[in-house]
Image 1 (cartoon, rainbow, N blue to C red):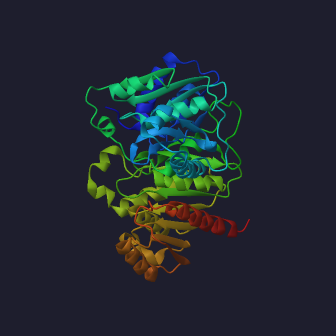
Image 2 (tube, rainbow, N blue to C red):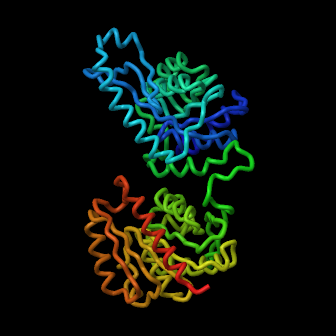
Image 3 (cartoon, rainbow, N blue to C red):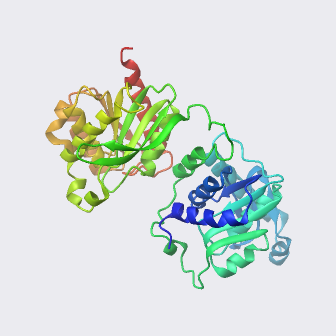
Length: 437
């Protein structure tokens, strides 16, 4: 069993080191779940990472049966045997192709943005997924990679059904699979954590991998010039964190996660990436030690969390972010700790943003908050929305309630988290740049 996709990727990378020479190689992850695995393989081999977006072309009256596949740029691979067997007409094929081609291009733009896809011509291409059940998508990806000019195609996955792995050998020059259990009932059963990978995580991993295999290159304008895993002083304990300071940073934002989360929260990491690209430093850190997390009382001890946040803010002023104005970004119960800490140290905090927060847990501290505060809540998160409206009545500082239409508590809906990141970015930039020079 693998701990999660990244653990699987690291273990797969160890095997890949034995079978491949990294010169002129490229790793392609199948979105979404294959990308975290592919990231670790590309990182270990120090070769570029990209996504390969493909869609199976299903027979209209039997969609699970593929008569081909379509990739980016309208590239189509057709299985003539299936076309003849299903007696498909050109019109039927064209209708399926048009629909799936549009979906491929939409997904590619979502994951890659304006960046051009990596060229495959003459290269060794490693196609990676988090597991193989039927193998239909994996075969399509290998076929598309070959059609795009790959000289050698290797397929790699942590786990797969034996018959599917065997069938992949017809489309790949080499297949690497760590585990091939005789009875593969579900890919997720081989992972302790098989949480769904989000679009935002795919985008973040591609951005983080942008310099792999390219010595001396930067990932692009606005990317961090300094990033380091750190230990932060939180009073009686030291806690792990991640500090990113862009060149010529305009301010620093400390993230305070909610109950049951950590510095690895994909939503906070996505928002932090948006802030970094806008020239803002970020610090994500764990609020509790692993031992403390076993006591659920600690998770909701807002006074304890706020006290640690005040200490961490002091540590930040001695770090690479020294001299920058400081803001807090709190999520869920972390928002209460951010507001509490802002009230305890009013001269330390320039602005506060709450995402789906529980400001009510800051209780009587709310009237003492002086930092301009932005509360962001989804319109469908009705109970929390009412708590935030009540908090607005108690806050005496500059304050705004931003309601994201159609969003629920975790902002999982398409475009919802992007909205959160954009309004938070603008709030921090506005208040950091108001300060006298």
